[in-house]
Length: 245
Image 1: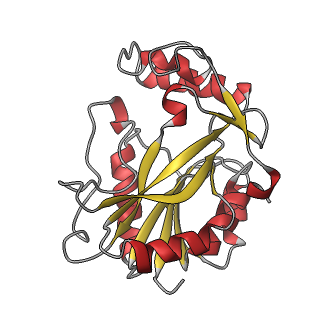
Image 2 (image 1 turned 90 degrees about the vertical axis):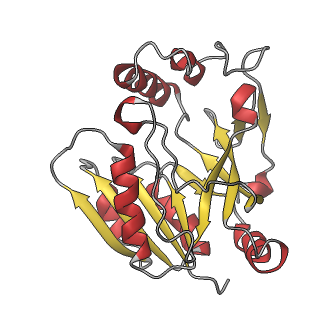
Image 3 (image 1 turned 90 degrees about the horizontal axis):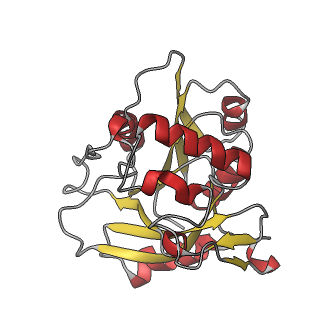
């Protein structure tokens, strides 16, 4: 892949998944920049072992939550590397194997005019081969790859109506979707992997954003209940071993 892709990570205490995430990103990206938000585990040391990690902003003192502020800091870090594309990832997200060839064909041959690529997210649940797919879990696509040109290099991530700018975009949003394409590259998401993680996430979101009817009080994180889950509750599929190797 000849296009220069710079990956950007906003992370905190991600030592459980960050090594595999960076390994997957290193397959398709030429450089990686990181904003670490006061990690207290071994996250930063793991990141420093990767040759493609070229810049780490280590925040030492906590600031009030503002996801838009942090995303835009990261974006500026990435733009300083003169990328052709910026790719936004979180520390609990792993690009599926064999994605380099898929993305290279999409960027160069299939969709060279695309400005934004969205990826489907597969929510790994309790087992590395077990994917939840009921409700929103089976149709979650996020725009994560942005082509940098004269029209996009000045864009910024937009604020939201949520406290702390929760649920903001990972990359700037285009005013029109004419140049947005869905990639065949898929992302394994481990952010809801086991019950301990899910319960902590449920408590965190309800503390920051209590009584959120739009998010059905976030109960979909831990169960099959709520408007954002499927009508039959939780449903799962198993990934073939060849997709995990």
